[in-house]
Image (cartoon, rainbow, N blue to C red):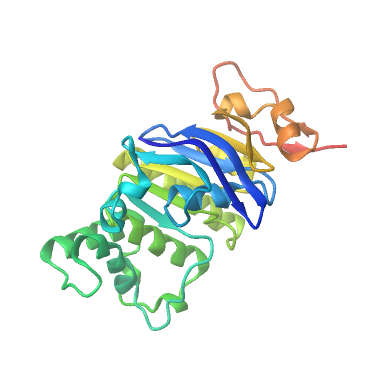
Length: 260
């Protein structure tokens, strides 16, 4: 299990995350939500070992992240940053093949097992047709599916996605989130995803953690968090929710709407 205990992070005396304690349920999709500057991206970077905590501890399988080697950790946790590196002159297959780095090294030759993992990842994400295409010639949604295929080729238990929807239109956002949910269900992946749209979080995720000013405001299942009082405290907006039929899960036909 991936868990954080009393985690804090500060830069030049400014506290960006303060005493956050969380554990993430294996095999579930957890959305990190909140306004800009609430600490979502900071938290996911700490969980991905991209930054070290100022205090507190993050552990995987009860072993502090500081005790994991870079390669061993990368075999357990895959991370997709918000700002992606350039893909100049890379084909889709070449991009996905980078996911095999933890298993053979950056300059290692791809083995039969590597090629099998790459092909399986591309099949799961429906990106086989992009294998010989230059990544930069693809649409935003197509590129994002290739990046997710790269994470799948890494064959980890955890996928950490930092705002993967930010540059996509609504149709491609739904496409990517549908893919994320499919992968979680079919492969039993634990997925932690930073999402700005609370409706997307409610529709596709199992759990929601809401942050505000670097602290956890509320956390729980979608039904527990997707309440008018909780949404008001998260976004400082009054929201009207449609009445849900008894026993139904968010979302069905409804959504959160701002009103004055």
